[in-house]
Image 1 (cartoon, rainbow, N blue to C red):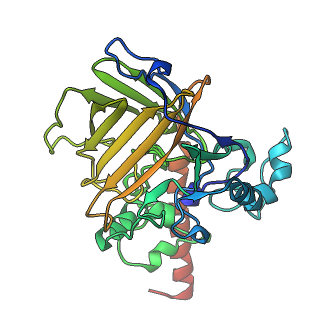
Image 2: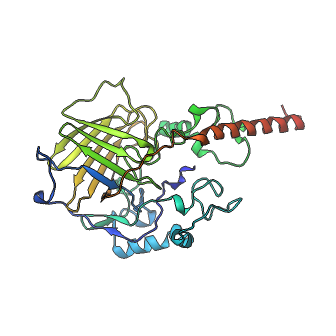
Image 3: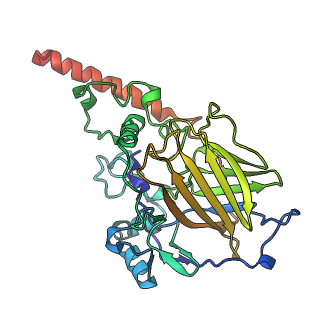
Length: 355
């Protein structure tokens, strides 16, 4: 599964209206805070990074939103696939036209994707991207150390499958030397868009929040993670690092503010590392939705902090079990396939008399 699907696939034209909530309209806990408990769908077709055509414009018109949705290749190439209830597998030898991910065969077709519908509208304005700071709506440049860490931590994602053991042409470890060299998402340990911070993904965009006076739990549908946020507490020692970081919550008015740090060297944020300091803000809206705002500060990975904001839609649906890790037979086959390609390469070298 290739990670190029982080570009948001546009399949609908529904716009989500949100406005700040009046205090009397918000369901509250016995302590008087907004009750965030519920299920939310964070799928949206608003792109994470702003299309360059918009320049520094944070917002677009409804007409521009409709044009953006209609012009996207997904809606053009696959309208017949989306509407067909008997969507089949890609053709043998696939040409990539009906599949997403790493090419044709083995990629996902429309049956498997659920990226959401429509674009996020915040306070009556339609954002051109989730990222709003820097002003160009795109992540700031990465540091050399951050670029190297992506190469080291996600080499199995960046490998271009040409049917050969092409990694043998380069010195150093290969992308499929063993289980630990395979990207965390392919190992079903940390997932794709789940973060933190949580970004929209190709599928599994649901979250379930359970709130008490002392804790908030956010159950992520993607890769079965449960974030536990503590109130009235302090961060633990830096030596106690966690995949999802150590999260402390506090209330600023009606907004839940969550500070997370003490992440492991490899994080759920593509490019983030152990120095990630994440600030998130959750604000309940009058229609039951959540306004989700975040700021990433990781000086060893990016040249400056960056921030984003979009809407999580309230839903009556359920968060279903994600059992990728328990049945991840593909990872074993990835390693077996790599050993087979290496044996073929060695045999070919012997026949050609190569050293």
